[in-house]
Amino acid sequence: MASETITIIDNRTGKQYDVPITDETVRAIDLRQIKVKDDDFGLMTYDPAFMNTAACRSAITFIDGDRGILRYRGYPIEQIADKASFLEVAYLLNEGELPTKPQLEQWTGDIQYHTYVHTNIIKFLEGFRYDAHPMGMLLGIVGALSTFYPDAKHIDDPANRYAQRVRLMAKLPTIAAYIFRHSRGLPYELPRNDLDYIGNFVNMTFSIGGKHEPNPVLQKALEILLILHADHEQNCSTSAVRAVGSSGVDPFSAVSAGIAALYGPSHGGANEAVLVMLDEIGSADRIPAFIDSVKAGHGRLMGFGHRVYKSYDPRAKLIKAVADDVFKQTGLNPKLEIALELERIALSDEYFIKRKLYPNVDFYSGLIYQAMGYPTDYFTVLFAMGRLPGWLAQWEEMINDKEQKIARPRQIFTGKDERAFVPMAKR
Ligand code: ACO
Image 1: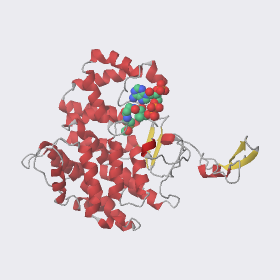
Image 2: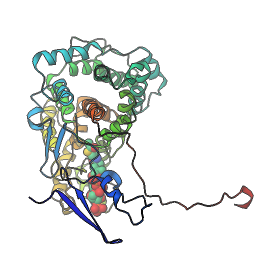
Image 3: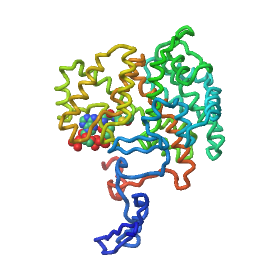
Image 4: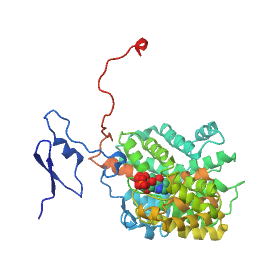
């Protein structure tokens, strides 16, 4: 059998090196031995944006971007999305297996027990302006939770980590709902532990005077959307959680870094950007001109393209089916008609075909959230609620991985060489 190595010849010195290949990967640190002089630093890899660098081993989520495959712990997303509950999926991601009935009851009960937040949280919220962006409020409040639970810093204790995982899963919907109410000046609605996870959240957002008539189709749609967002291996926000968590900080701080990363328009903020884009286009007859301007390099078609998926995002396919169910309930939305036409044109346009740009998870999710009654700037909060179990599972995996140390990339220094300080009078 051929040896599982790669031979590198350094043409500067003529020296030859055999570097092991494991899991189709070479270790960047193995290149360090390649030097011209003994006191050289040795060769490094340069990979801005981590386009081709594996930063960890992970058993949580599998993606094949070329074939449009997404699996959580081995289960295809198409099988989980409408058969499991969000809490079942959260358990699966974190514990590695689908829960048995008693396990699910225990997990659900633990979460229901912790849904209340300290009333001081309301004082924080009141410090935010009425038009504060919900994601800015969310990342601030989640980060601040570490001050309420200083025991969370004991990250080497598995039971303690479980307790913080439960707290985050339980309190994020409450905080998210309070943010929703704060933006509207509505009184806060306390959690109701007789309702399920999604039902409780929807009640806390939409209940008026203690009354809310739940729509089971919309609640199921929200649950599916959260499941579709639950994990996506080493994406920007998950990498942020891992990188910040690798410093040994508590999980509230690490998750708040994930929320900050998700806020950006190239990541979770894209669902908000899609709606802004559809508003700007305004009507179907203006689509061709919009597509031409994107092709000329003036902005991007938001909700299209993905770093990993170079075919149709499997989540986008499932979301389209959810959109059909939701719009049957809420009525057709003129923006949906623009989106459908935009997709049809883009998928047949050479520019998008050549670059393998397909709709991603954000293309339709915003339209659905809007139809459910959530405002544009709130969409990414819903994404964060969905992604939380993934962040927690990845954080836990990172803590248990003996190979992980504090994340600390190298750089290629491009600045000035040493020079003497110039006094003010001589500058
Ligand atoms: N519209 C138009 N052109 C695009 C788009 C787009 N949405 N996305 C990529 N391209 C083009 C680029 O201009 C580039 O063209 P070029 O080769 O002629 O220069 C080519 O496709 C490759 O683009 P990159 O930026 O190199 O691709 P990358 O993998 O770095 O970007 C990203 C991925 C950020 C998602 C990008 O496709 C994008 O900005 N999409 C719009 C924002 C969006 O929908 N983000 C959500 C991502 S999914 C998520 O986070 C849940």
